[in-house]
Image (cartoon, rainbow, N blue to C red; front, side, top):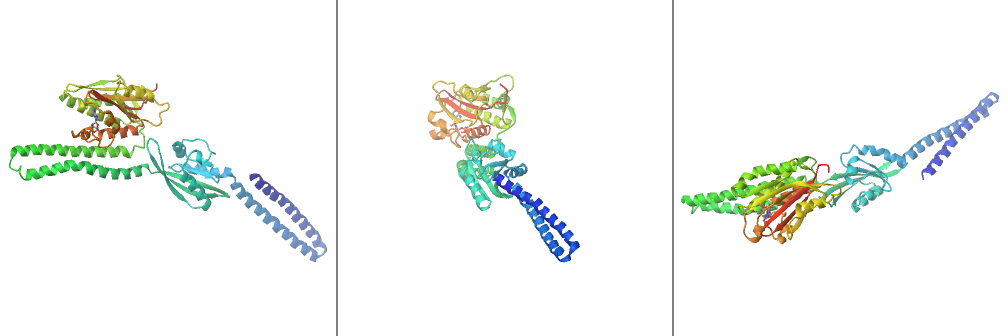
Length: 445
Ligand code: ADP
């Protein structure tokens, strides 16, 4: 195709000197005849003028067509590629055969490719997008396609497909907008309203009843009044905890698709949490022991969120351990994913186990873990898979509510998911439970 165009261009080029020769020869003849007789000289002058016109027009056409034919070469379409770098969102440029002729750094990073020249299908398989590219190049209309990508965190993307004409070449530009935050915000808002109203209704109903009793039959009885006020305080505290946990969960979910890039010392985090909870736990005659190296255990993570994880696990362990019992918190480097799982979560023979979360991409990564062991009642195997469900409480299933929110382990799960880590539990009913979390280590092996 390109060779044909080139030979046509050469043929036209060849005709310019010929026309120029002809014009020159005629003009010379005209000049000679002009001395002899004026009529033929005039005729020849007219012919020379015509030839000049033809040569000039031919030369002009050559310049225009050879320019546009050069622009139609695929190599020139790639000249548009640097423009893509100006876009903050991932962007691709494909030719008429959907071969990638350009991409920006954001696209290469997100879709994990480096080379140019491969087909779009090698980096993007979504049929709706591929169909939109074909259709846009066919009818010249811009399109927008929304699609989801499954993974550890579901991603929502809107892809704009704009057809382009560059010389005679057809092409399309694809720009990808991440919609994950918007969609998860919408879903969260709906979930939040449904869950919060459902869970808040119970303490609110108790409060209403207590207020009615205080305003009526218990109005003049000082002992009843004190008792009911204390009960109201408990219900108000429960409402506050619910609201705090729900807001905390919403905040975590909002940026769950953006993994942290900070560094944090997991051992230091555990030490701080134990310092804060220690005195309260000691009052209940429960001991907390920390097993950790003297130096830091550095991980890729956000310190505040990791502290939330450890605090929720230690809080639960202490809450369910009877007086006189012990909670053991262990922090250590765990090796690769399988090693981390074995060291952090597979210690007790005959224990019930469940993996609540496991990192999707773990090749070549090493992990550090925190394991929180208690000597509480343990959890029956059939309840284990439901532990990190929002509002799930074993006690409620068994009919003896203890006032928890059922959100603590859901918070742990979402934080660990944001950290692209793992979360597991093993439990021996009647003897105790162990909850373990592992996240990417930031230390060299
Ligand atoms: P909360 O403790 O506020 O109810 P969580 O999400 O932290 O909520 O825990 C969910 C449920 O899991 C608890 O209600 C309890 O039934 C069970 N659970 C959590 N940790 C332990 C533990 N260490 N020992 C026994 N049961 C536990």
